Length: 445
Image: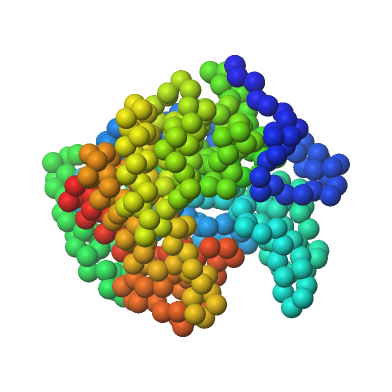
């Protein structure tokens, strides 16, 4: 059994992007509550996902990972969870059918309540307060009371994540995810969207295939339910540490807050607390790699996090930006591959393409998202390596947060339904359009 470093030891390493709790006794009370809570996920489920990620790394499957930039407590409703699942399942159907490859479905949900920030404070009209760091840390309202870092919010994260996972499991195993229901999921989308015709064509072909299988007496269980996993950035050390437990079967430690956890671009320091903590858990792990990452950095991170070179354990999620990916990704992939390291390569085409629109809104251009994804595929095709997946910020709602797409959302349109509290997300239509374009890239490959 591998011992886990203490929380004090982790903080002594100079942990980045952490809350500042003014009351140590309140912090300890919240942590004691979390330590007594049951697991949110089970070690065996994490092992199953690790096996699936090994297939992704070998080029035998494709990862679809998506969800909110930052979840909110207010957003924990059946409708919100259903809408996010609907768009992810619809994207997975398109990818699976058009590309003929198994799709590993991972939600960026049930734990994504904290966000790193570039500045510790925010100033409005001459008033400076702590920055909003996600509902796990403080409130969005711009008041001194709301912006206090409150450790009890970590307990609220646990309960909100539990409710979200319960809903996700009910939807994915209780009949809603039945492949025969795909027309019901998206009737309005098919009727109103520019890419609805393409979606309807795929649906019609699937219906004919299912009818044929029914006729010959084939009734696979896979048509009625789907395997769905949760993920989030392992940012707040108190939360992840309190939910790290020893599995009675294997005596290995797992972070039971989520099936898959990742280390962000701002917290991937090789000698930092986040890398240290995650090096001791058996979950599959992602690492975000931005433009400043060298191939030696990536190799060192792999060796630290996976010294035994366990298959399916490490996923590198690249986030370079559309203008940089074709130059920066090749040397990274070449050197990691030459070192004999088996990793799943996944594209995050969102975070490197953020800018401020003329109307003042933080946004992303859909064409940039597509171009970075296309560059990711081009690089892997040229190198003979496998483009293992996409990691996107999206919502199942018809928001107006990213410009472009089939309906050509403009900078002026952003004010119509700009609902994110942090980063802009693809809406339902843009997400499905992305799925068709990625499916075409996979099919061409």
